[in-house]
Amino acid sequence: MEKSEIIKNINTLRKEKNAIILSHFYQDGDIQDIADFIGDSLALAQWAAKTTADIIVLCGVHFMGETAKIICPEKRVFIPDIKAGCSLADSCAVEEFQQFIDEHPDYTVVSYINTSAAIKALSDIIVTSANAAKIIASLPEDEKIIFVPDKNLGDYVNKQTGKNMLLWNGACHVHQQFSIERILELKQQYPDALLLTHPECPANLREISDHVGSTSSMLKFSKNSDKKQFIVATEAGILHQMKKENPDKKFIPAPPKDSANTCNECVFMRMNTLEKLYLCLKNETPEIFIDEETRLKAVRPIKKMLEISSKYGL
Ligand code: SF4
Image (cartoon, rainbow, N blue to C red; front, side, top):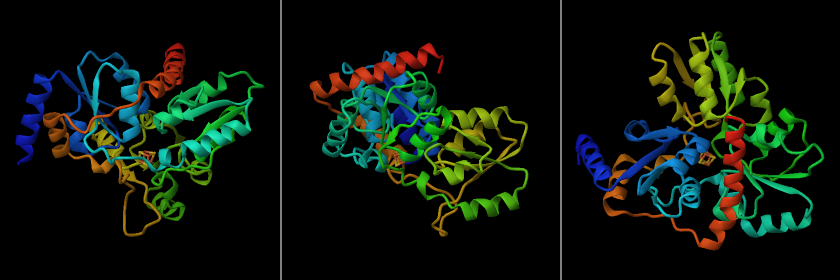
């Protein structure tokens, strides 16, 4: 089917079914362009919490669909490809994590939103990269904290807040793989360019960056900056919005260690396509299901995050 036909069909189906399409910044440009709302994990969760649609199609990875379902149990939630997982979320198996918690009974469990529903159900508070430092800084000074699963984001928050959280040893295959050497070469090639880096990247990359922040924070920074060139160290999908919002500026994807590639893409995010989005709306599958006991446990730490975020205007 032609792309224009797929787009026409998606538009018809979403009206007929009172469906909303939410897209993460890491999706293909075609999906971002057709979505009702585009955002980072925090914004997608906030949007899911307030939508009046009957159906949510979450164009992102599995844990994002789960988060929407946890928040909106009365709605049907679909993702275009059920196999779209997340290497970071997968780095935290529930049995191992339960054991880790049992070994540290007096610790508060703070989990990044990039975790399965089962891990969220074992957590006290959920955070995203957009609000992690502020939420964790708001906890009492002497509170002992476990942070899971991203060791790089955890290290970044420890440095930002002066906390000494115990970190799970997980990492994202996209953000772990940027090449410092190739980025330094790019900086020589574009001496005026600012380096924007996601906090899921390792410390040696964050330390040479001009701005470290979530995808929404990178977008805001690049829009407000009077500089014209930016090297962007996160999943390359974000460049679509950056270019749309700033047509007069140049955005250069930071290269990965694999010298065959000029940018770093998440294999899981890229499993979703416009055609799969159309089929998902048409056939109402694949759907996200979560057992009610897990959902009830997982919704508490997410609600806590949304409450603290709204208190601090995040
Ligand atoms: S970019 Fe990394 S953290 Fe994000 S979905 Fe892909 S594997 Fe997970």
